[in-house]
Image (cartoon, rainbow, N blue to C red; front, side, top):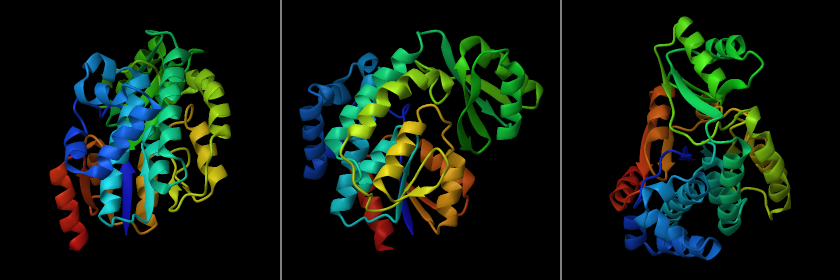
Length: 308
């Protein structure tokens, strides 16, 4: 049984997807559609500059576009996953792949999602850090100890001994020290523009929710295993509710992968830029077959995998 998983913010690089668009008409059509919805997006993806691509309001639609282009190439060659899932932003890519959201609507939604998340907290007032070598309970306890009335909490429970925390800048620094005191191996500040997936994102959630509730949505063709509770959603209302809730809720990626494994998934294909999710899946489910697709050569490898 196969699941397609879709990456979130942080996997972007200038030029991503260009070779796919050159090689496959299905991918080229996605970039055309993205440019029609958000004029100039293709140029930023293919040509940069990097400073423009890393603006959150550009990064999110860019990764969605490249992920969707890669998925459409695979779908045209017969790939039919049993489940889909995505990490944070990647959940939008998963919904496009499942057919619950139209791509044009999704690309506009995530442009606004990125803008609203960026504007929710003034630059410098929020931070994120990766805590390595301490479990979720230990990280949660460190955050509670360090909060001192400020927001800090687990934001991404990624598995493989990695939990990312988010919140007010000083509180994140205190929580990092508390985590090290509890046995964390390392604490790495992340180069992000806002503290995603914590209570400080409530203003972004409040702005995005009416747009999500208003968009045209249908029941997904395959279940979407969602970030907020790792449950498979197969109804239109359920996938939208999950997207509303995930702005302020932690991404429970380890739980998502374990749920997919429990549902019978043995092969995970990361669809889109980077290989971060593939690496996490290997750590969470060491026996799984894992592949990544973002370049033309990757498509041939998937052909061979599906043939086998």
